[in-house]
Length: 159
Image 1 (cartoon, rainbow, N blue to C red):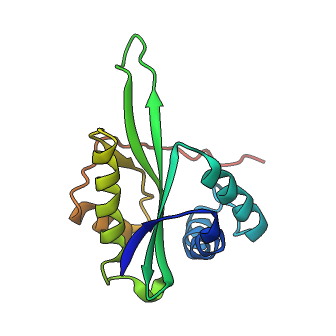
Image 2 (cartoon, helix red, strand yellow; image 1 turned 120 degrees about the horizontal axis):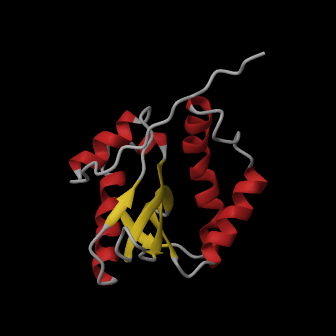
């Protein structure tokens, strides 16, 4: 298996790999996530591929795509309370279910770290939903530490 940067020629591979993760998210958080919609996902990914702040990494085994990561350079301006900062955000990561627990996610994360270093940056950040315990375990094994807890209160609908 090897990791490569993605170009538009890999669009269909990325779109296909997205299905499993989108389905998982929609099943667990239907108030937030849309059902998988291939044309909409294709448009989104096509636009992301054209965005210079975005880098896609593709895990390939024998010419078959088995996972991907989408990373975006983020620049946040400072203000009265926080300093300006620039970092890389891991916006998406997906691994073909048949390839889970075989080092694909770890290899994608290792390459993401190399990308961050090559940009002269120091922070790689991500968000992960509480229900996605498998992803949390992977991120923790790779050294990610929680530094912010986002909480919500769901207000019941009153009739």
